Image: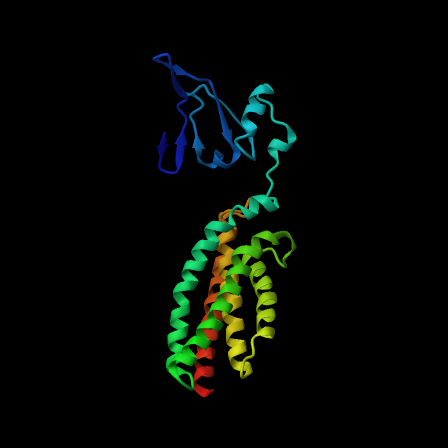
Length: 239
């Protein structure tokens, strides 16, 4: 039974049309913070040995309600991180797809030269830049998580975003440094922001730690992205 932020245990089940009461309850460690019970009124023995997967439950029961050491150890392997990518990737690509026409239209209106030519050119650059940011923040950050710089997810996303952004800037022939700096700020800010989406799915972050990171990371990401957008507009105007 759920009441507010607490879960009160009433261990009953039906068997053969009869209501049976159980005296033992097996819980995963992750839900213990939501569990409360009155020891005086409820005679329940609560087991909470499982840190990993539901597949460990049969072995735990067969072993006399004793957990093996690997059952108590929570992992965050490459495959466990990779399974998180599709959801974040689809959402990030959808958002990026909505931003590309905006850059394309503004580039065509403010850029020097025919509207269609400038619109297509700026749209292609925006597509490459935003795709680079999405790949670095939503794909490479979880895959390379243990090897990236820093402990904060935003810093990890920023570091891999820097690497891929510099690689893209080396390939694209910008007419001046101003648009290159602008897109660098936009790409790294977006990559850092997208990387933060994995804090809730990781096995070692805490709510207080995530809030602390957001207090300093989000303002920097907003400032970096905004400054990059302003510099991009200036580059179009003075080109």
